[in-house]
Amino acid sequence: MFVSTFTFAKGSFDEAFHTLDNAIAEAARAITGYLGEESWENPTTGLVANSYYWDSMAALEQLMQHPAHRAAKAQQARWLAGYHVVIAQVVASHGDGRIAHPLAPRAD
Image 1 (cartoon, one colour):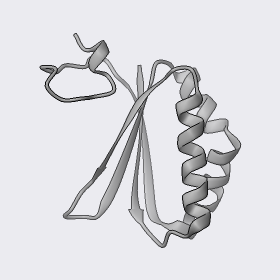
Image 2 (cartoon, helix red, strand yellow):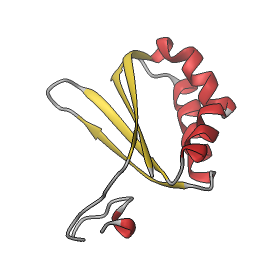
Image 3 (spheres, rainbow, N blue to C red):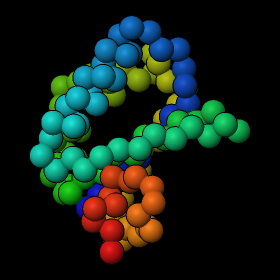
Image 4 (cartoon, one colour):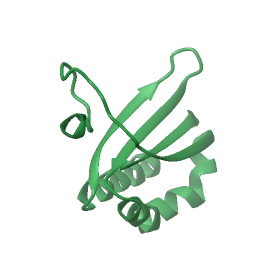
């Protein structure tokens, strides 16, 4: 399994941003191998982190090559005050089952 975490500083969002953001989310959810997502905002820094979980790197690469994702990447400076992406392999997932999590069904 893999996780791609997109951390960004908010800029100025317009209708074009929201349209593209929704298109990317819909594309991700339609890819076989998409496992789920989470979003967090740090109240101290204002940074937002969106984590998408995938069953394979090939599934993640499908999103990276999607036209909406490529368009957003090309225009990110219009809307964001900075970003960073981390792609990592998930080696384990643990929990007590009392909170919902995209990887909970796969936890050991």
